[in-house]
Length: 94
Ligand SMILES: [Zn+2]
Ligand SMILES: [Zn+2]
Image 1 (cartoon, helix red, strand yellow):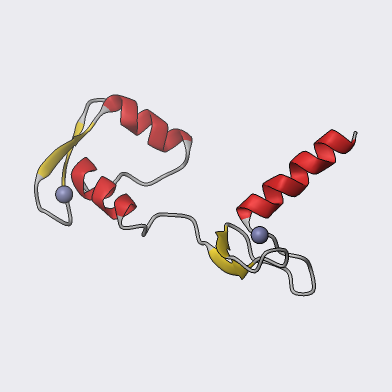
Image 2: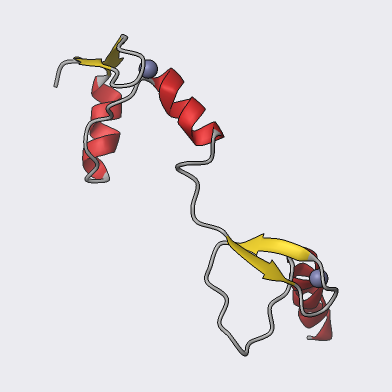
């Protein structure tokens, strides 16, 4: 497949969708990008493409944190620090 020229929908600049990238995209069943690399990285930096985060309050220390999954109600939620601490405790217990 040859390189494809695409006009960025955001900045209207022409960018190349390289053969290598095309392969990666098709392997993941993704559509051709509509934005140039610059705009895509800007978008990623803005957090729009970031996975959804859920705000939690740690049951252990009361700290606010964000987790990448929907916390189940009635279940203990831990901030990253407490989560890691409890994990390493479990490791040492064995
Ligand atoms: Zn652009
Ligand atoms: Zn905590």
